[in-house]
Image (cartoon, rainbow, N blue to C red):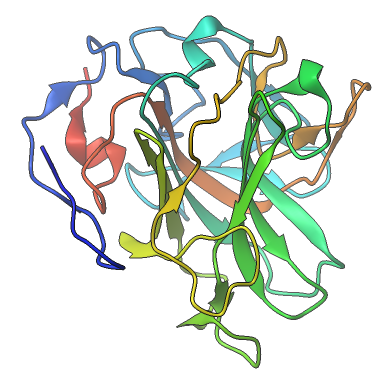
Length: 272
């Protein structure tokens, strides 16, 4: 059950029974990256690694391993499937990441989970996109892009890192911690969570951004024939990639269920 509160109060999720991840059909993709990049969902999607992405059994968020990406050419791809066209449903994306370095990345997005190239006006690349964005040393924020039938929706968190820019969440980011991001859509409402806490989300640098962003009556469109990509994004009208993530990515999860906020997928779904 979901308990909605008014105003800017966060959404609370009650506990629900543990569900076997190998048998439920809500989970469309779950890559725990413990010892390899296998998909633990019941769909057993084929995950293809490129570059030199490897398993890191020293640095991880949960389960004993994570994916290590070099920021140059490392990525995972999962073939296009109707399973990833979640546009008509509630959905949840979860991912944990660790920065390899905290530097000025010259105004680039560091890709976490993408499908297609929303934000670029290419309907044949319709999909979703979850990034960490660094703006010329000003700080980091979470970016969300969703394709729709009337154009792409782009919403952002406040600045995550403490600094001179406001509003900011006051975090002192480092290269040893993992940070979790959970994007949840319930009906027409988008909710974004960082480290298990709901954070504001808006389409611009609103000085008082809301905690829930309502997409209205638009119809989302994730129905492109391009793959899901972890750690990079495909360029429009090319077979090349860009916006490579530099660091660790763990617990990649895509579902049309909404897991209780603050719980890692590994804590909510029982593995085989």
